[in-house]
Amino acid sequence: MTRPADLVLYNAHVHTVDDARPHAEAVAVRDGRIAWVGDGDGWRAFTGPDTEAVDARGRLVLPGFVDSHNHVRLGSDADCVQLAGAGTLDEIGARIADRLRSHPDAAWIEGEAFDYSAIPGGRMPTAADLDRFTGDRPAFVLSYDVHTAWLNTAALRRLGIDRDTAQTAYGTVRKDPATGEPTGFLTDFAVRGLSRDGHRALRAAGVPWADPDRQYRRLAGSLDMAARYGITTVVEPQNSLDDLPLFERALAEGRLRSRLVAGLFHPRGTTPEDLAAFAAAARRHASDRFRVGPLKLYIDDVVEPHTAALLEPYAGHHGHRGGTFYPPEEFAEVLAGLDAAGFQAFVHATGDRGIRTVLDAVAHARAVNGPNDARHQVVHVECLDPADVPRFAELGVVACMQPRHCSPDIAGPGRDWAEAVGEHRWNKAWPMRSLHESGAVLALSSDWNVAEMDPLVGLYTAVTRRGLAGGEPWMPEERLDLATALRGYTLGSAYAVHLEHELGSVVPGKLADLVMLSDDLFELEPKAFLDARVELGVLGGEVVHRAA
View 1 (tube, rainbow, N blue to C red):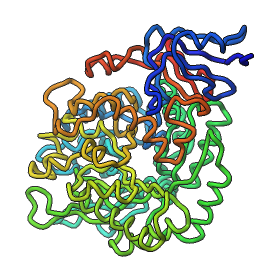
View 2: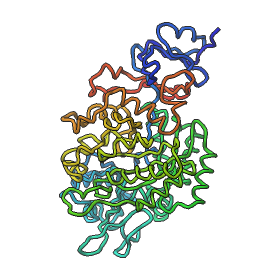
View 3: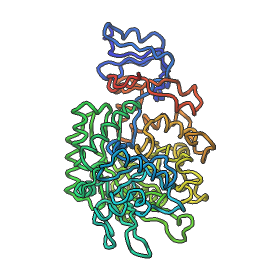
View 4: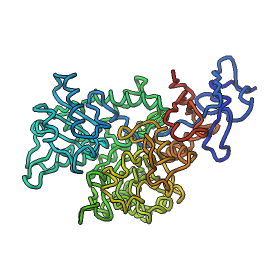
């Protein structure tokens, strides 16, 4: 006699992401794992008096989404002025004014998600731009990609940044070429400001954004959002050892309703002692709910402020190609050492020269250590030279990409990304289809809070290359079909963190991480993806989200 299941979903369109059985009509779950997948009334053999049987009424059932690059710890901060969508300096000023009216006693003005395109003339922002809105109250504003920070004059004074300051623990100080004075614009914030030393320096300086309680509120809010969006596994790519107690607290308090893989930040200068501490943390946190292990590195920065590394100069510049954080030979040796020690590397690379430097380093590691199943990742892959497309599959490198980033309303014609690289390089922009057809593994993700966390937004962009309001697609030849995009958000992302045997497809024996959507995406026009929602989210057989 078949032992009853705890949960059964029937009368469904189950898109299994399993090549051996692509579709089914029902799933039975028992003891946290998938017990049966099949068609017709076979599910009835798994029901008993305590079984929850859910009639899907033809809805789409999928493996739980695996978001392979999601900064849940950074999150979105309710105490910050929200600048997403503010298209001009005046609109930024209006939102700051609203905040000052509602919080007249705030010691700092903090903002997030400003868009480089809001600054007139294609330049980067300055302290003077903020001063007229903030007065003598210090202001600390982060860009939408969290790679740069914008300070007013009062904040420069409070933080002790003057003409003699070239670097801080949390960023590189841009100077006015005529006066030598700091402009109020800091680059490399993602590399420095999100590091252990950077956070400690910001806390010591009294910047409220870096306070641990603020960090936890951001984390908890993001984790709630992940559960609501059917993200059953989150890969949080960049953390220090100081940050791990935040995840431990979330698990203890029941706020961690997704599995979480935490990457540890490996800045240049990481010592053997640091690596030993990273390995100890990985051994300490190795459960199916919370694990630590991959290492996050940077080879370059971002395209919009011209800090990504390009093979040829930026459009409109005769010589500037951006730079890499390591000389290529040094980076190759660093990666080979990590590879030999058994670490997996997530390497941020956006420019074509940065990406090539990473691929060259992986080739060097394979030559030195021999091939292995490291599954090193190039993260973002924004501007990829066609000659390097086949190297991902050849070297076993995973392409961790964010479809929403390539939307024309973020990066396309008339936006800072497209203008910085120039139209002659647009064919290099997020070549997801080319990578897939070359045999590379795609691990798709949101990069929250750089872009929307909702996987349905990412799926829409992946299959259309259009903005959220529609319009013309940008580089439509690189669109993915829906099945390929879904694989990238499930099995591809599970494979990217060595979890494909447990997650990412609806197969008997795997962990019962499932989502049921309000609609069958395969029956919809892509624009309607944006109106769909997750009706049911299941983690290890437990319902962790149920739509109202």
